[in-house]
Image 1 (cartoon, rainbow, N blue to C red):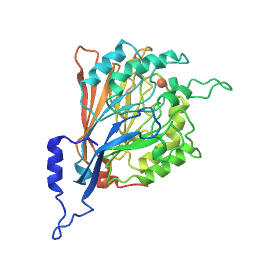
Image 2: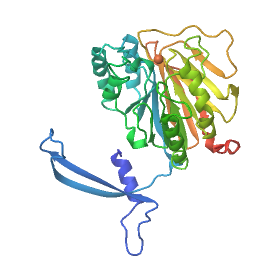
Image 3: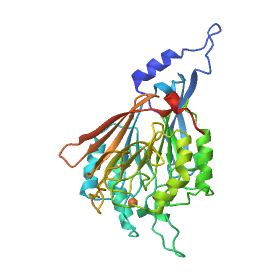
Image 4: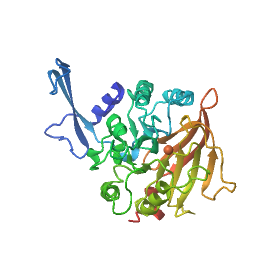
Length: 357
Ligand SMILES: [Fe+2]
């Protein structure tokens, strides 16, 4: 948790010291304690440090409906000149968390590519949280020899245990006002699967008063009008198993990769427009060596609002508990160009979309 000096002073002023006549209301304040260590033995497994100072401050709890956050979204990055173009544009943005919809390094069994990918990402991922889910290029399956996702799970371990998941391939986390479901397209997802059972439990724990926004990310898109990757089990079967569960829980947006293009859809459920349905966005245009998916179905479905075969990335600016600004940035030009922009209204703020579960 970081506060600027100005904000810290303002926040502290809102929570003065308790007095006999004016006690602190614990419902409105939290205690923040900073412990400064001087590290003496950095290679030791224990803390190994000397406490230099301890600072305790009481801070006010913020109203979740007033929280704002900026999420950047990428997919199918790989490691090409286009990847570097995307990363260069991403670095120019001040964001809180980057969400990565899978197909990271395109190592495809060549382990040195994981090294070069890590070196390529370090200048960016070292300074901001990069939260990832797996794509098909992470699987690297060698039956009876090497378990699937071994390199991915080893190199990109996510905080799955903290969300009650028993697999690095699906988990959830929260960032100011947003509950994020990172789902796995390439592990079991049927209604009897461990992932589905975990998802049911996780959704039941979501507190929309605390995290008004509920978004999901996975690799293989459920709604996509490109001709690439049509009819795959990871799209159709997973959608058949999970769409109603996510719909009933008022998931606001679902992001996917896999198809190397950009497509934003209108709110949809069971392939029909539904004002209480999920906005599906494909963002698999990060810049990998396979190139763009340029062939679209000749008839654009009613639920498809915008589609383009260009490299780029997306940004979700959560302004408050009811409104967020989605934008897609095309990076094939010298400067990043905002090529799509639309305001989103939180489903939970719509009385007509009251929780359906
Ligand atoms: Fe993929």
